[in-house]
Amino acid sequence: MASDVKYVYVMKLELDLNKIFSFSLIDIATANEPCKFTVKQEDHPEPSPDIFRLYALSSCPYCERVLIAMCKKGIEFEVVNARSFSDPPEWFNPKNPEGFVPVLRHKGKFVNGSRVIIEYLDDASSANSILPDEPKLRAKRRFDANRLESVCRVIRKTTFSNRLIGNINLLAMELTKAEQMLRSPFYSGDEIGLPDIVLYPFIQRLYMIQLVIRDNFLNNYMPMYFPKLLNWFNRMRTFPEIQLVKETEGEVRDFMTCKGF
Image (tube, rainbow, N blue to C red; front, top):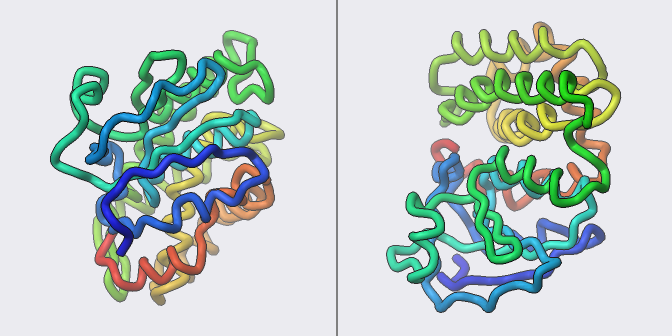
């Protein structure tokens, strides 16, 4: 187990994100938003104005959303990755009273919540836009992302031992909704956008479970009833920004020893 300390890495697009997160073994059962995030050691100096600093936990799908967005936009950023501690620094609670991650620090300001952070990044950096400029289409993408949040919540509450455990009927209903919403290669049309980034880390969690257990729903029901969703997932995995958050062999092994996520 890694020691309970705080690490900072300067992240550039060509670096392997798995190397950044590999030092910290996080129980997947804690990887839900909001994830607790506190810091044991003293605060780091204020980052330079041009640097985006992300406070995150490994294996957190909500943090992965932000990482995908940052990589898609080609933003240079720092990642502060830490486990949960009981003694946060004095500056942290006033800026983030609930103590949850992901949290973005930029130009002395703090932004909380994965979707809010993604939209902030899109406004702060014009490169490789995640949301379209046209108001009606922009609203549609936000609406679709919001609809997919219920899919994410159901997946988040689904656990496993030697099979899936949870409200499988509700999971099937939510995945049906996600399947029906796919009318293009991606939820955002012909390229990745906000709804795709919102959903991907959670479908990846189901994929990781499928790698370590034999479950009738995952192995038989999903390919039969959700072919568009599975094709979307496979297309997503070909993009560089997705490659950086794809599961590692170590993360799959961790799934084999945990009770849920």
